[in-house]
Image 1 (cartoon, each protein chain N blue to C red):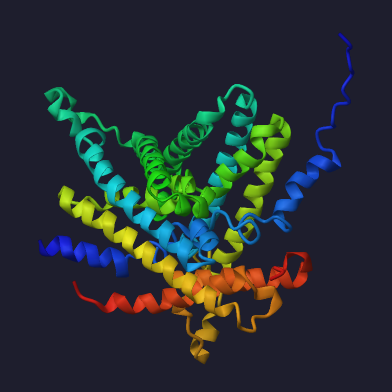
Image 2 (spheres, rainbow over the protein chains, first blue to last red):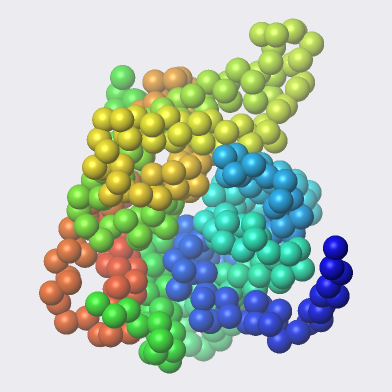
Length: 218
Length: 205
């Protein structure tokens, strides 16, 4: 039996760092891969729920990527979706209980969307595409990268919607009173669901304008 | 009877799964390139929602909520198993979708081929799990109410996806700026459709 000494990839090598960097712009889960749209739009009326949901998704994605990566050689192909769903669902139950315990009012605002992390296409998508065929550490980084890409877009949308919709950021009045006396009004439409869709459309527009490779060739 | 009808109409137009709650967006955006596939997927979603919501309602009433297990033994009145909702609901949804997949494959192989991966992806379609979770949150009083909610949500989703598919087929011949083509313009149009559906908020039921 020939013994090969495998060159161990350093933990923070360029290749591994790319796993975190690419999903932030080039393969952003929301604006490029078109995954995880549902929750991105629904919880972004205010900044606080968006931040809490992003952190929850980072935790669930990183943990599930690592767990499935450890189990990847032992899962029979026929039932792998069920195994993945069970892992994700258990993690989400944990996160949900933690949220209910420590930030109860925000968890009420998030209502069903914490549960819907289970069906968040990004998590299943990355499990299938990456964790099932890669080692735990790269899977962990991939999970963090994609969740960060998701979180950044979420926070951006929530920031814009809360700023223009209620004049506040994290419930702190940011637009000075003088503006209101001048005649400035909060844009009530921004708080409503349809504006989230239009905001994402505009973000995609700006992103594709500056990152030409993403433009669809029809 | 009136209440059931109200719930049905409300879940199609006012609490529309796509325009009010953004559920099922991934497959909504990915499958809506042609009307034909959209109709197929939409019908599958109606079917799956129409079955999983009532079944999950029964599960909730008989097993999950606080005090539900009284029929087994009077002493179980304090038992609250609702933390198991996620796992049990998903299990039922996954099995239902497997069933739908087998039925579609047998009765309409052409539709099965054109839907491809998106048929099994109904299992992770947020609209399906969302339907069950909303049903649980809103505490419907009877099986009939839960069923009408499930069917109504499905029909609402169906309406949304067929609508956007029809529009997307038409705008292929329009002059959309390059950076906005495809995904960007679809988001904006969906937003405009959402604004249009908001006009239904004025209906008093």
